[in-house]
Length: 341
Image 1 (tube, rainbow, N blue to C red):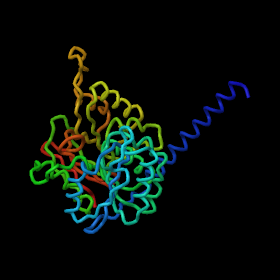
Image 2: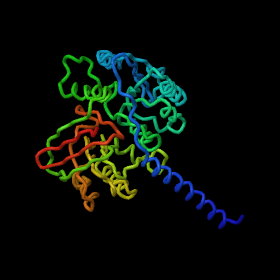
Image 3: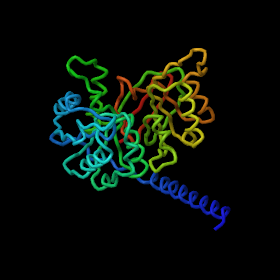
Image 4: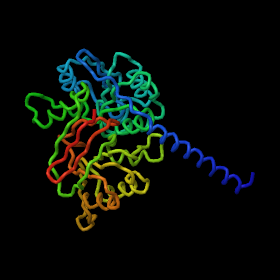
């Protein structure tokens, strides 16, 4: 085979593979979402570390709170393990997560913390076990990999929320907003419908949307583009949050969303916490605000946009049921975000 034919055949092979992934994603997106059974007193929640490491002592406050909800706790073997920045080796984290998936007594799995690491193991985890035994997967930040992958492939609802490392050391003296955001996890797990009312932002775009909600950390979503874990946004309400990124990176990531078509066919856009990393040199400031960056990338679309939503790397990080249909109403006086049952 000459070089020209080789390149032609290779190009066709890659094109066919991309088309296959795209076709599968579009087919799965039309598949009805599966809602795992909601929890009740006496059920077991598993704690595992698919990303960063954390000790048993550090998660003890979260265990006490969840036990007060009437839940039993199963501590995964990766809790307390450390391999570099990770909660154990890749293989240890894969095996621990799969044990939680296989255990029929475990009704929900909370990731102990975020950080980085799930993208290293997502291809090796047998996520199909979740289809045999649907259960709630809980977390945010790096756990966005799981939310996106599961939504695009298994079509099973998950919970985007705080994790064990976000619980206060002393519940009684914690600020109420922090406690409320953690109580929102309990409400979501036990089947209470999400219903949040939020103050308006002058940059909001008014409108109404009824659609499935999906999203998470912007940088993580960008990094999943072109993979089997890629987020599917067509016809959905997308929520985004980010932390410690310079403004030019935020602009670059939103260009990625725009150029890959992720912003084109949304029903609505929700922007949560965006903690911007300060410029090293004020003379090199980017020049556009976060609001201007986002409105620039969405100016030709007419769906509602909500800023300052209580989700992300911040105290007011409230639970969202990914994959579940919600009603978003953005008006000049308030924002309503509620689950459609």
